[in-house]
Image 1 (cartoon, rainbow, N blue to C red):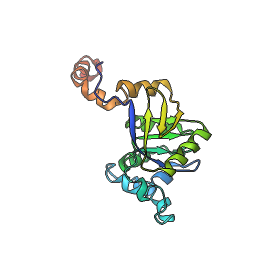
Image 2: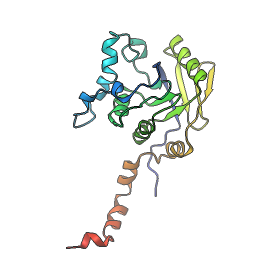
Image 3: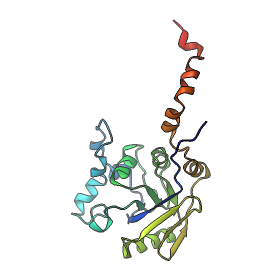
Image 4: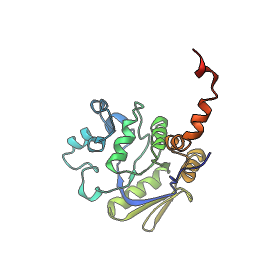
Length: 200
């Protein structure tokens, strides 16, 4: 199978620290927004209830974090229901990678499916990373999936990702839909050989 041109090795840009454990998918995108036909516009509603409660002080509203590409979270991020709208909302807000202490398994898989790497680090390292971003919000944060590091200024922390998803990002094989489209002639040829499609 030929690879498509969508390798993801390094992501660099401003970071956004979002402190708190057990942030579930209903907080990421409330259920009332799941009725949409497409994912267009979901980014405007990411964390909408939390943001309303904090009257502009939520990190997703603060001017210093606008344009952030890397989200830094804590433990068990994305728990709760399996809604794929949650990573879609985060991605459409502008986030391209997430660093956390741990992720809910289905949330992690939904992120991989749309090209958002989720890497883990230990508790103290994450707190140091969040503090460094808060001290200098404009400083670039760089996630390197090849070296498994995240760096900002003089701080570099080791991160982890299971080898399967990591290799999928590095090789460009994470995009299953893209792979299917790229192999359309082969798919059509295979379909002609399926005996049950000729049943009458």
